[in-house]
Image (cartoon, rainbow, N blue to C red; front, side, top):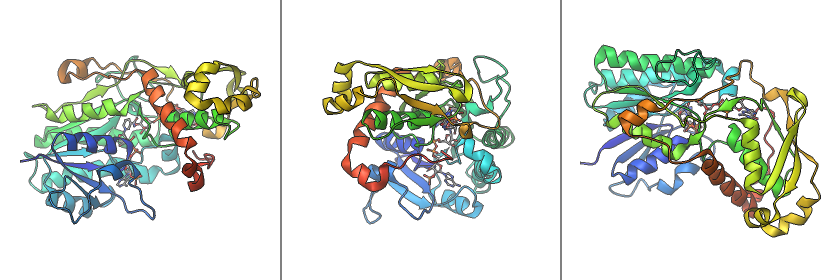
Length: 383
Ligand code: NAP
Ligand code: F7E
């Protein structure tokens, strides 16, 4: 019998990679997606099967983390062997604007899943993965952060996820459930939402080198993140649920980098050197030089002449509206426990991740139909 997994947040970055991974492993994957006025399944369309087909291995259900009855009904119908609870309002900055909704979906939403499994008598059958986050460390109490590092959340998102973390631990201890937290540090990919910093950068840099955009405005350039590739991190989720004993694990690369350096790295993938000058809100990034052979290969010789004329120009500015009321300055994770107990380690370096995202976004921006479909939209104030 094929194992049955239920993924909340299947339309998101991690949900899409995880669904594909589990289907390849022979699972039947059920996913919960929200109703939206436009299609929101771009990331999983390649896995979609018409409901009229027999023996489908991916089945979607309408649902929402704020609706207990809906979640309980789906879990009761599906009776999954494994639940991956990935659904969340996952944008830290937006959580300051929507704190109550974030608490409901990200915090109480997790309780709804755990309680549904308990009330349906599935505690011995169903294993639960909770998508916990390095944002729990917030104002870090220790460097690097590990499973025993005290939490100090710094946003409504992180506080909601703190509740979700502890309610998962509590249901494990109180009811003997196989419920585990993956404390995942930032992970990115070409599927990353366009308003998270890495994707905002790789999209903007692609557009700048192609002559489609003059500059990009960023927030805090000095914060540091431990970035891995989502393709590696979803494998850790799977491994966590294959363990005999439920437990909590830090999943990270152990390397931390500033936003500023990630911007430089992204331009370098196109053969362009960018440097920064000025401080705080007055800091700018400007074009220093071009390695023309790299530019011709990665961007295209036809874009070179007009780009050459731009040397010296400012391409990165700072807009304080992107600053957060409370910031997480540095994250760097110690993944020793995951290495030792799960046999997990990242296969992508940051350079490899950046390469993957840049090559994807240069190709994406070049597509004419992308332009026609509104892809030229400049990220707005809130993004
Ligand atoms: P994501 O791309 O933002 O995806 C979030 C998913 O949750 C989407 O499918 C979204 O649906 C769904 N969702 C949001 N609110 C919902 C609601 N009320 N009811 C049902 N579904 C809802 O996030 P991700 O990067 O894949 O991250 C997956 C999980 O890991 C999240 O819980 C996130 O907080 C956590 N996490 C992420 C990272 C990271 O670096 N990526 C690190 C640590 C933890 P729509 O597609 O309709 O918006
Ligand atoms: O910001 C700074 C920003 O939005 C990273 C989520 O997946 O990872 C993610 O949360 C850093 C912050 O991710 C801009 O101030 C500068 O210091 O990409 P981000 P995040 O807040 O770390 C954790 C682990 C999660 O759990 C979350 O769900 O970059 N930054 N300038 C900017 N950030 C954004 N978004 N936009 C800027 O223009």
